[in-house]
Image (cartoon, rainbow, N blue to C red; front, side, top):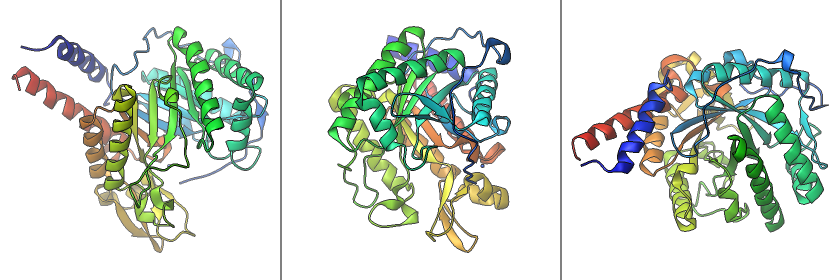
Length: 383
């Protein structure tokens, strides 16, 4: 006899997938440093969807997308959430966008995403700041001062309301002191208290917390337990392991590295009594070169030139070897995440994905669908 919990879960997942869930080359442009200015109601499309935010009620495929990316090139139907990256905090709690084109792309992203039933969220922070250098000192200053933190919260909420966004993503890379960790926890709590009552989401990007070489926990990145209670999704950046123990491109995001990450976060959430469904496992959509002087390349660029290499995890091209995650590894990681009760998967970044059968976002979605129907059949047969 089916348990009530399994029946409810089956109904929610079936509704999710039936709704059409399954249906690139880095460039950094300086478009000008302009403070945020809200659009008027006449120059943006209104979205009258009435769906509610139910944390952990369905599996997600989240894609970050950079602000210079042409939104019309993104396959929004392959994602449940698109995280527009990045808005930049300043020391006084103001919010900057990378020029008028970034703001225009944000509005196009919201409109096109909503047309496909995909949530559109603004990501704040990132590694670099448009005023120069790392975002860390700007973000740290903004959240360390109570008045500046209040300004930041209010400014972000105003942008959510004005631009018809579905929430905010915090990308503070990465808390290095107890003070910064505590202030980030306060920011998340204060944002959540504003977002949740109006059925908007909060997510946070986090370091993998695992050394790719040793498999041990990284102690230099600090998080307070409360930081994981506020958001709907905790997006684990389970990649960039190439920097651990020297430079080793093959450690970008191998499966063994991911296994250690999943074990670490699963154990931590169990100990904290936080549902694992909040956890979202990240994958890279780029290739890391063995030659450190070479540039990263997008997954799309690899498979466009060599389609058969969509099934591989490395390729020799441009005079070096690139390491990446292909379709089979993406599916394998999806099975790993689902088997451990994770809420879904995340990709950096959506603009680097390929189209059609070689798309990693679609491969992940297809694998989730396969797992769901396999589990549903097993449950129906009393297994």
